[in-house]
Each structure stands twice: as structure tokens, then as C-alpha cells.
Image (cartoon, rainbow, N blue to C red; front, side, top):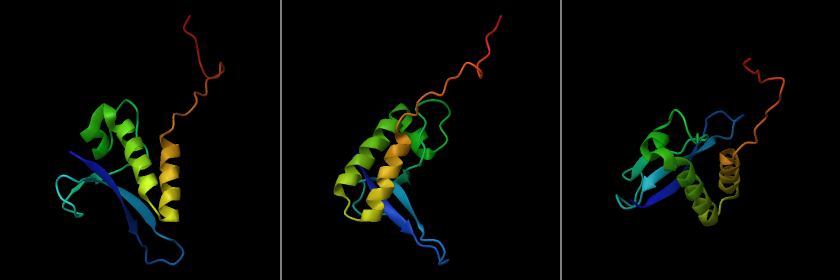
Length: 111
């Protein structure tokens, strides 16, 4: 299965909003045209472990985080639209590991 990422812009009729971008995971071996090659949407947040909430996480399991990074980085290199590139960078930032905010006050010790 050769995977790719497409950006789909959903325009809103309301002039106060620009619309939003969705990233679609596609199988390029299945077909060259969307929507025949559609697999699932790429979620904004992907958990490294725990309950898998999205179809993407359920389909690709433990590899979902690394696969999402790989697809986004490949799309960033290939994309020419400035707005799409900015959204890809935001998505990549969301996938970076967060520092642990450990404080002694919030942790209780069993005695």
C-alpha cells in the first residue's frame, strides 16, 4: 500500500470564516483519483499509546504517529500553497512530544 496525503479545502458560505483544511490519507496503489483511493482523514491529534479514537489510529495502530509525521513531512516538501504549508507545519508541531509538567504539589505519595 503506497500512502499519500491530500489537502481538501472546505469553503464556508459565511464570510466571517475562511474555511478549513482537511488532510485525507489515500492509497495511491488503489487509484490515482480521489475519492476512489480514500482511506481516512488524518486527525489533528494522535496519541502515542492508549485508546485509539480515530479511524486512522485504529487502522495503523502503533505506527500511526510515525506514519502521520512521515506523510506530513512528505506533503510539506511537495506542497506549493503557502496556507497549506502553514497548516502542515501546525500539524507537525501538534505531533511533537510535550514536556512533562511534573510538580511535587500535584503528586501525592502513598504512605
